[in-house]
Length: 156
Image (tube, rainbow, N blue to C red):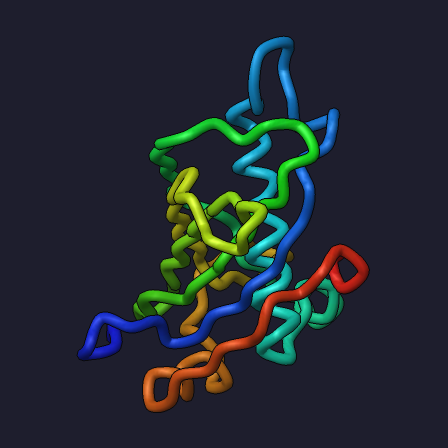
């Protein structure tokens, strides 16, 4: 059910600074990107009007069943990173999300750092049974949606 023109079905953009907890003794630690992917997924759901905590309270979840990352440039302490989280594909019970990480340079230009992808399955939390995606997600196949960059104050 991927959008015909290859554009995202929805996306959310946020910016944050690399902190000491993201680093190993040399560079950014690769696990920071998976935590940032989680941050992006939560932000995307919130942008779509269905925060994960609400879905949890209703008995649903979106566990990750696949995750991959490609790295091009390291991020450094105190650098500003822009994360664009894009809903790329809807299946019957799953969705695919792409994460683009870029360094925000002093002149405002962006330098690509990494790209990730995750596949999430919509489930009943108590039974872990896969469910068909809810109508509010399926409706996105007919209309794209995006948001503007969010600063640290707007993050979870």
